[in-house]
Length: 221
Image (cartoon, rainbow, N blue to C red; front, side, top):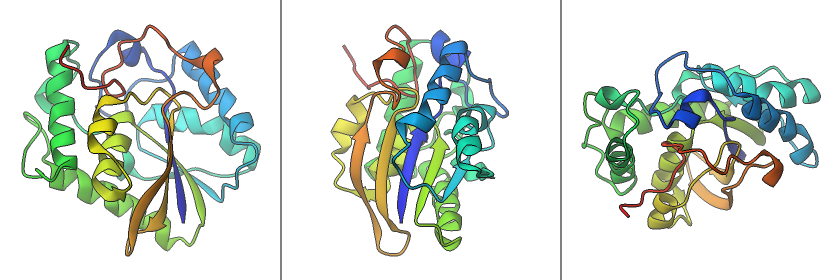
């Protein structure tokens, strides 16, 4: 099967540089709604058998235009939600962003016992994301659009898919409505077939000035 892992549209917390991971979370900004509205045309030539979203509001709002256009009812899977920030929740400092992203990419490199301060460790995150993906595979769909979250997508793909340079994944931003495609299955594994860091709708819906913690590159400079 093929998973099209689409990051949600822009939220006010993305604009404010906040590590906002709690449920139900914020909705989309005006730009985020334009990003979501651009998805049906951007993916117009793609086969999509099903749409899955996390339990956070921003993913449902991002998926809605495409779901309506395709006549699909999104499947809500809480396991697809963002990685909980724990004690770093709503932090806006660059140091907090680096600690958050450094922790999750540590998981991608195999250090799954490392815990987010006041939050989950890598085993907990990967188990619940794997479970959500397994539910999609068992449903029998071949091509599924999964609307999820920046750090969650980057971390799960870096940890689980072949063909990923983890250093590159760590240092490459994933914009709102950026898209990562993987194919395979839970038994034989996954491989990356495409990684589009920019919004699928193109430059017209890019947020050039946002300090966006869960989508930004990890850069000490």
